[in-house]
Length: 156
View 1: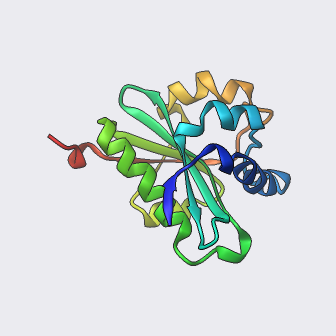
View 2 (view 1 turned 120 degrees about the vertical axis):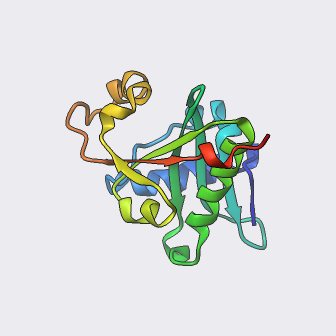
């Protein structure tokens, strides 16, 4: 089941993200960052309430949001959990009237299957000037930038 994250989910979200961060697949998130941005997060919970996946939709600008911290427990991969989490993030972006959603990732093929298109990072100046400058990989980021244009999906 996909739902908005709650306070009780924060440590599980941090563990999932931390597992990927230790492998170098994503940036770590502190408990403080997750608490501060909890309203951005969706989680996938299995029966019994165990968090098996998480993702956040983070607003960057009036027309731009980022899908970030997408993490799925290793034993749950290939079951559509990541797809459902990204779809929940996109649905929220549409409700908010956001016309473009992007991701920086080492798994571009996953996002391409969901309709995202590769772009040069220079097309995302809001991201570069807020988050990227603080990253240890800047300016030599090796992640792939992808964007999904939602302008045709906006509600009236």
